[in-house]
Length: 610
Image 1 (cartoon, helix red, strand yellow):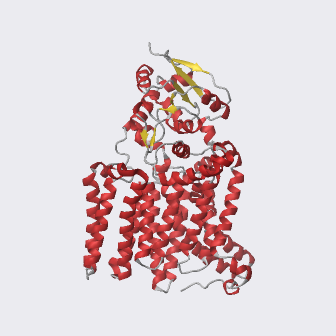
Image 2 (cartoon, rainbow, N blue to C red; image 1 turned 135 degrees about the vertical axis):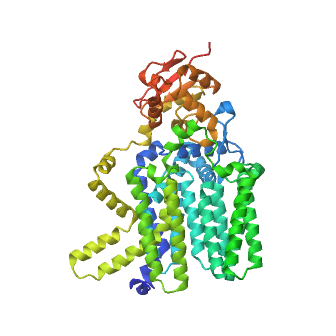
């Protein structure tokens, strides 16, 4: 059964209806949402109150680049200066538009205001590109109305919109945008060009973050499955294009953004030689299999499966540590007191119940709608495209259960199924004669939107389970409140001569952003030794902590007594340095330094040795 296009589509051949295309609707809806977001966050924008430590560190990287640091030099020298700095695992692809925008506006506005404008406008602009890509991708599905309404579903997807809000300048928005580009090419008619564009997009996804590897592998499996099932020449061309674009694009982008060192380095937490070698082997194997063109289905499946095993074996052979994952080398103390508390990297069940519902509900609704759309489709191409959406959504949804930060991509792939289901319910509601049933059906259609649907389930859960209701009513502190980054205190700290600050891990990046000082550690895992030392200092014996402080050449200890991480440190032991500082009974090698402001930020000076 197919779904008819809306009657208005026939009347939209001229005038305003012809002008109001899906792309223009998407831009209008996104612009309205972005304007609301800017107004709602105006205070945060005016004070540059960042809500995430990675945004702070990203801007520090951009500032260093504009100050003359080399394009290929991704070392953050103001973190762990005693160890020579930290080589960041991030990509210049994300830095480039931010740096270009600031460079363009600086002569007109000055450095500070140029940063403010770029940090405010760039995330919504990238979101506008996502909105257009979303419409252009999902227009290939069976119901043409989806392209008209999916912008509404996009702005109602919390885990997507939050990555494109003003000041959110880190790489997560890029990941969602590139995943949409890959999906768009997967829904187009099969061709080598479609595969190449998707492969290049997947390569950019990996260059930005190796977190994108499961999505890149998922779509490789989808295009491989299509050819393995039907042995069509155009599917074979798409598969070859995808793998060629992925392998070649990964090597090119790695060289472009990291130079020769990037091609030779062995890192498991970012694109590097082990992954590039594995992709090259996989592409070569796929080219050979495609050239052989096995006639039997089981041979195609076996050969492609062998190519996957060969690629995985290459990865482990080039760098065996990669078999254990990117965080395997972390000190156990860092895992216990830092990594397990980074919720975006943890399974969804480690999060509050509300967060779990907002992750799971859109995926369930999207899967239901996509499956029903697949069943209702009569044309083979429509069924194939809906099958692609279902497989991609299943993979992304499973990934979002295991790693919370993947929820944005899962919601992105859930949108067409949610929209299809909402359109069907809405169409049915319009044909109901009774007022109350028609209103009820219309409300049901609105509940297919990710945000209203998740809120409705959360409200019901809160009514049924008192513990969930209490959790929902618990007030949430802003990032500034959680870190005591009072402007007066920060300004006073910035006026001090350059120093090395020892801070709780979460406070490090904001102080790098706000001041000219260096810090021992930030919440970035490559700095594992300094992170471990920081934790041992705060949770350990003050007498032993002194030696570690001097090893790290720290001259000031700065912390927020109300911060979550500092609270964890002081609860480990009443005799720990954190507990002693909190109680106002410091060891003799520290002296208090007063800071103005009412934020509660505390500072202690390390007395000279001896």
